[in-house]
Image 1: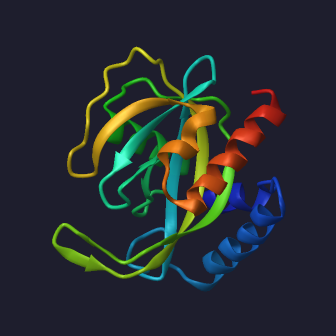
Image 2: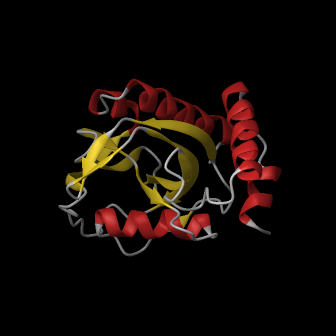
Image 3: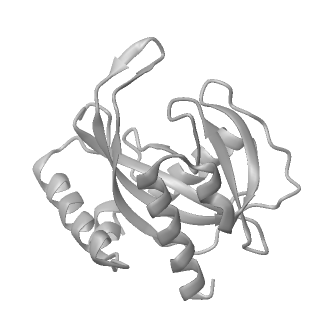
Length: 187
């Protein structure tokens, strides 16, 4: 199934996801470059919400640009296999080797704002991430390695304490949604 079909067939969890899915599909149909950063207004990103086996902790990075604890993820940069992008980013940003999808399907669809910032010495204007997220599992005893150009720390955080670490209100709402969805799904 194509990446577009995966988004089309995704069953929204709530009203926010229903509306975001509608807008994401509109963007895909309107612009031919949403899979790349050539579209400076909005582009597809793929993230991993990383859980341990007990599903009571999540592996998070302290993101340099956002100066906040965050999930892992990155730009599709033309790749159509968004699960593979999420897994690649989880590995790159944490150093873990064995990242396994808990479910192979999209777990969350969101439109996330990105404020203007400097990256690699260049100014990046404010834009939107059309976020496709997956739920994955990693062993807690895997070696963690900071990717210093992107993050300053990595650690396992108790799920119920995420909002004590994240200082981004829009991401706190997203993490709350993911946690509730995990609990309701009995994953």
